[in-house]
Image (cartoon, rainbow, N blue to C red; front, side):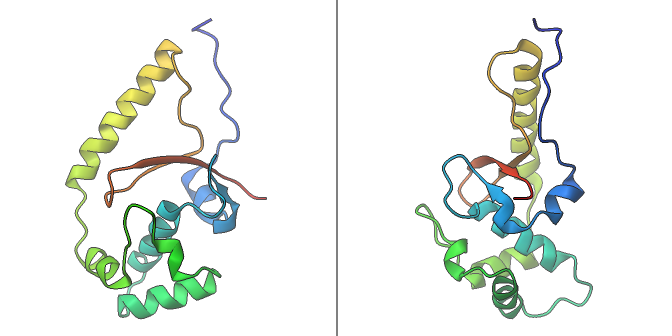
Length: 141
């Protein structure tokens, strides 16, 4: 019945999602940490610093601390060098991302209201690199 509420488990707030270790994020088809989450966490950690160091050095240290290799930043579709990420970190553009996420959110609301299709659960991230959208679980193992 459409008026019945459908439980969404496990629900994580943004703060809880950010505190989950990277190895705790899994996708349906992922054997390793989703690349988009690695990129997101790397950039968010860099932007949270007051005195920003040189990005490439920061990224290498960050990958080492999180026990990840630089291959965690590449995919079959696109390789992303640390230098390219450094340029993005210095001059991010968010205006097209807002429009895309607004469309995705509208689609999710329609799914919830009509009961057609399963709404995204837990974490959904949009990648401006390749225009892809990924949905996966982030939870403590």
